[in-house]
Length: 183
Ligand SMILES: Cc1cc2nc3c(=O)[nH]c(=O)nc-3n(C[C@H](O)[C@H](O)[C@H](O)COP(=O)(O)O)c2cc1C
Image (cartoon, rainbow, N blue to C red; front, side, top):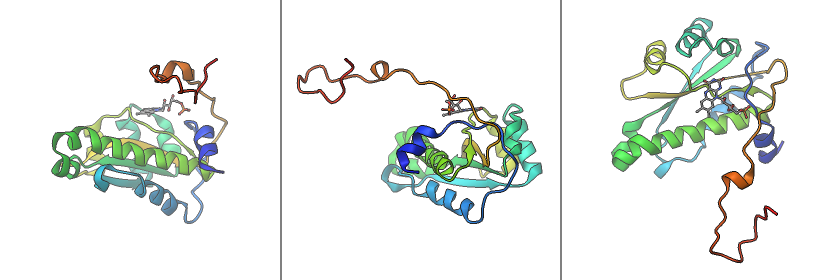
């Protein structure tokens, strides 16, 4: 599967068979995250890999009882390190870059998981303090996303997208800008 195919076929998976990842796939997923771009290559992130059923249950509680999290064989908790970006870029690093960088790592994870045939879901609705307690996160880290990954269960319904003409603004000053013709 090429990158575009993976991007276009990915969808949020909220049911998992419970089967494990194939050998070596956990490491491949972590590599996909690690090679995400980051501002100034600061890599202001920490990736927690949760495979313990008890910890997964605690994450479910922290994430407003989203039960499917605990069905996955592996749950990633992607954390940002605002100080790491802040020490280089000040307030912009702390409040913006570290979140953009971790979001890029999360998207890499989702796309890689899809390419490898796994289901995944970006879970952002959770109580940060509760997640912090479950993982005993150091003071400086901010949990940004919980991502359960594993073989998916029943087919997930495809969501729609706003039409291109609604989300793309053409440069109206350039007559030669014919790259996208909305008809
Ligand atoms: C920042 C963010 C937070 C999200 N939080 C949740 C969540 O807490 N629970 C959930 O089931 N899906 C969550 N999602 C997944 C979205 O609901 C999903 O991506 C969107 O509906 C589009 O569907 P698709 O991923 O199948 O294309 C989140 C996605 C993002 C990017």
